[in-house]
Image (cartoon, rainbow, N blue to C red; front, side):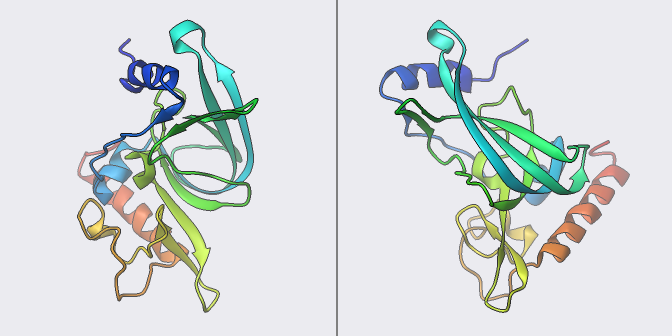
Length: 194
């Protein structure tokens, strides 16, 4: 079985100072997010646990991020879901992956997860596979990108405009979930996903 490139690159970066500074990711389109994800769900972070794993050149810190699943949109995440990510802090030693999302207990997100347990950051397009659920000034639950910009149009994902603040209203959580389910149906009907 072929190992992900991250497990070859990151031990070297890890031994050079615990900081990976250059992660380049081509932002996925909305169709790519939906089709590549093994699991898509609305979840709230309930726990974070960092620990050392591996031996020798494979010795590294990983963090297990545990979510309470509010709603499954694709796949079967169960009532709770734990995602393993490269990086974290153990005994005062920190390992970071640039552009990796930072989670904290209480965060609520829509996550597009792929290859959990074998990919160094198991989100489609790393930070692009996370959408924050926040409340706007009117108290409405809306979606923002990982960088905090309101998500106004899923068709902008994968373009230079995806993380640029737009004048249009942000998508509500309910509308975004409906768009995800609709796109899953369309991609299944076209044979692009099962």
